[in-house]
Length: 472
Image 1 (cartoon, rainbow, N blue to C red):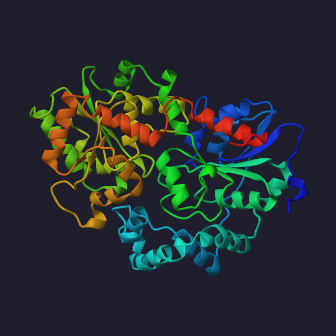
Image 2: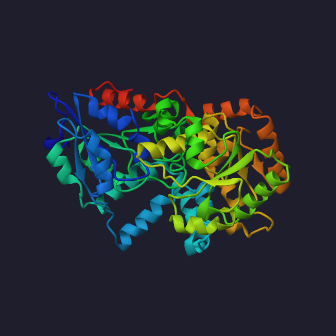
Image 3: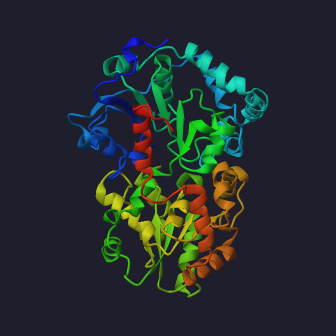
């Protein structure tokens, strides 16, 4: 039975809750002309942004607040206890993909014990997936039923009573507080739309509460939603990556000469952009030193330079500076330390970094997709420098990630298996940048759905249709 206080109203603006608690989802939605800006401009829709009570988040949403939009601070609520913890373990491992297997046996980080010290639980996790996880009834009936009974604190009920939302948008569906917001919407009969913040979330863990409709970034993710999470095909809509809309807006780039000047790069350089894997890979400095040597002795074009993009979001700058200290004094090595946050100038530098690269080198990263949008070749490091590390510390383990297999299957992103392989690939791409262009186009088609600058618009249009009863 619907709670009368949350029945859909026929008159006046429609209210939509937008979960902006997670920093993982904010960059996808708060871009110039993005989802948040478009929603805040609609006179017949009243968005309420749910954010942490944090000055940085208030600053991000402040430009969109006013007569028609509001913000509410919330806290992350994840009740503890033995039974609840046991249940979370159970439902999380109702799927056991190659990504989950990697996390359960070796772990993703090279600087931590395998599987965080819980490697012995891998057989149990696999057992749960291959028995209970095969049951549609377990996933779609039993788990939501038990979740509602165990997680019954209603931490956000007061917000539903206060604002009477017509729809709840959760753009980081795999985590709390998004899961609990979906659960509260379900209890009250409020419509809900969700979206994964990242393209690897649907193949990691089972999500215990379904939204009424799921928006995903590409077709492989739609397949994962149907196969692993038991969404019906008509409950899933592909919209593309809203954050990639920025790559079609020339106002969000610096002119090439200004960008090079800011980073100190000579105007006539060929740029080898290196995207750091930080805690996921130990031996990147060794590999970079060798690339620098190839440039110095002429085995790569002498006008080539290395631009290192440290993983400034994962670790502090102090840690990253220590990691790359041996490269800091090299004449052909430069660094981009700017964070990719909501500051307009920072975003321009990040976008320009991809546009003006000649070739990209990375571990198994989303950057391969972004680089393809700019028709920039990417070479993935599939080796650990001169030594061969044990698998749980080797970059080779990352090749098992389920979501990245979709990228590799297109053939548009080659994996270097050693120094000779890396040198050959870099020399080829620096000399013949058009090589593998057709494969990069296939990669974009498969992994991006559309790169037309309209993904944010597709999301907003879908929400408007939902709010006014025109589903589809």
